[in-house]
Image 1 (cartoon, rainbow, N blue to C red):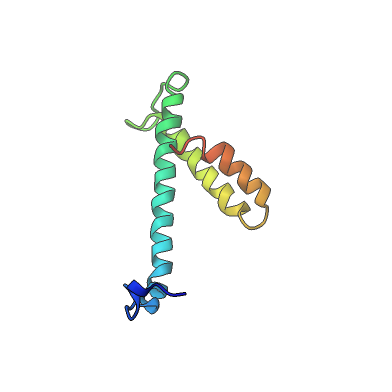
Image 2: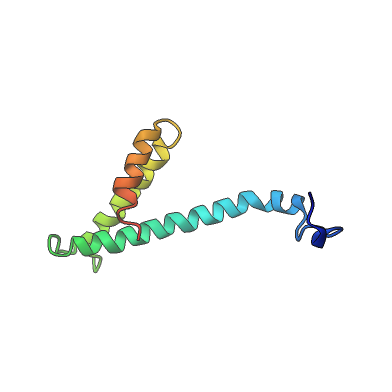
Length: 103
């Protein structure tokens, strides 16, 4: 059963083009997602730590920002390390530590 309105029409882009660009697009959107996750973790966790961490050890960079970046790095590292080996650990880290701060 074909669609008579599309009879004889070619697809908008050749399949070979899509197969060629797919890996690059996956990398691009993966980087965008990781950046989104880290930035939102920095903003949300940094705001939560304002009453607790008030100092700035490094010139002008609040300690709460350094703690949030470190936390984001550790969460990403835990996700990468556990994604194929321990699916349950991956999902726990993703849902408890990552999704809670990615807004």
